[in-house]
Length: 450
Image (tube, rainbow, N blue to C red; front, top):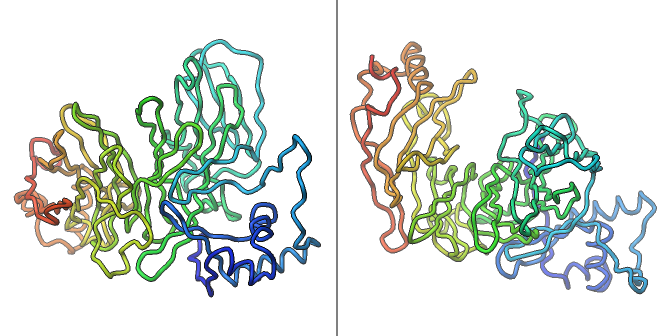
């Protein structure tokens, strides 16, 4: 099960770390690359390097028990550069990710056509062409994690990247590897494969960040991956969140594996979307803001400097040492009465999609017995909220809470269906204000018309 990391005394910078180990800075850096010395990095354009004394002692003990020692770095033979075993990690700015694989890719007999579909069967990733032939498959040595229902991997975990370079393809796959009990993922990693199944690079979220006085090291989950149109080449966006606690991030990864931080917030990010207008392109990031206990929607202008969610200064929700830019807009979508009475700590945005001339954001208000009560917020192309409606699952939960005596009014008399919803919007120049968003009965389910 994921555990919250309790830090011990910190050593800041390579000099302190090397002095603690009684080695040179160069040797300490070698030990990180070649013998797994547990070094942590913050975020930002120049991420700080630090280490935890407790972790260092544990590492030293494991090194001694395995018969290894703090060896001097070997000199690489001419023409044979030394390759690090440690995967590259995100450190705020752009970094190059190491190539390699923990599995085996089997290239089958040449098949006609291009990759049109990919998916997981058991512990193997398959790529198929238009006629259903298997082009290649990659078997992972570690056990892939599936959710508690045993359902197949979500479609967003496989992204087919076309024309990189022109006439070629790449396939990105967000792998989640199961823990010992198989109950949850122990780690997650994005693999990028060539059109023939070779692993070109891997990205593993392994960064550290401080909110208020608390530092978070992970473990990190990849909750959504989105392929976005960019010039001259497309890029991947990944929604990365702490497995138990509040930090959430949007990371941009180009097709060569270089990653940079786009956005950070005090709350998990669950869904991503790109909106392109004649004047600009925007990235929409939906999730939850833990300070306000409400679903959140960040509007990030494409090409803007890295930004962060607006939090109250001086609180444990304020990011420290991270991005200092602002999003274009930031919305809080309030929890409904079903969410509050049902005992959920907050609602959260779980899906963003286009619908004709508008964009809708779907929030999960309450989930019980595999039935989800949802609210749908609709935005125009100027990204202003224009109406809200609720799904059939919401109506079912409302009736159940009424039958249990937790709600004292019927669904037909529900105040939420007769009054606007107060949505909070934040803008860099004006700060917070409230927009009263009307309920749209014509767009609701039949359950509300009885």
